[in-house]
Image 1: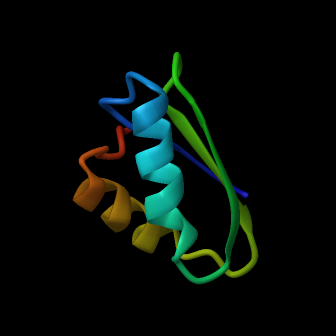
Image 2: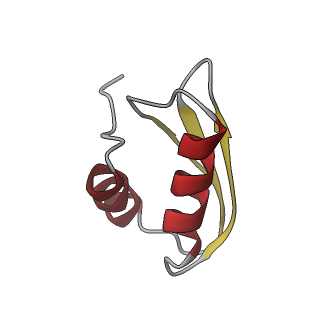
Length: 66
């Protein structure tokens, strides 16, 4: 599982955009997003974190530093 805190998550539409955008990436089985915290949780096997982060930036939800 990977957890990435992102910016700009404000509504269910944001959640759908993230979930749909990450669904096609290799190894991704399930994605959930917590709106209040902006944390994206991705479950799967062989997930490439840098690929997730790049896709999130492309979707308009840049990863935040911890």
